[in-house]
Amino acid sequence: MNQKSVISLTLAMSTALTLAANMAHADEKKSEKEKCFGVSLKGKNDCMAGAGTSCAGSAVRDFQGTTWKYVPKGTCLNTASPTSPTGKGQLAEFKEKS
Image (tube, rainbow, N blue to C red; front, side, top):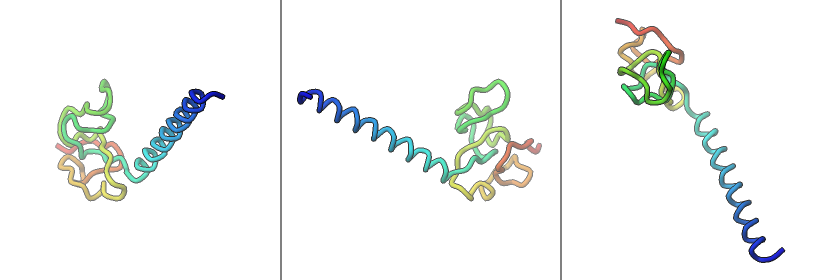
C-alpha cells in the first residue's frame, strides 16, 4: 500500500467510527427521554399531530392532545397541560377537554 492509500483508509475508518459513535450517543439520549402528549406549543411538537399532518412542527395549536414532545424520562406526568383531563402531560394521545 502506498502512503495515499493508507491515509485514505485511515480517514474512512475514523469517519465510520465517528458516525457509529454519534448514532449510539443519539440512541442513548433518546432512551433518557419519553414522549409526552399535550405539552408542546403550536408548531413545536416533536411528532404526531393527527391525520393529514407531516410530523415534527405540525401542531396547529398549543397543548394539542395528539402531539408529543420529548421530555426527560419521568417528568411528563408532572408537566402542565391545560387541555389534558388531569391538567398534566400524558404518556398517550388523549382527547382534549373543552
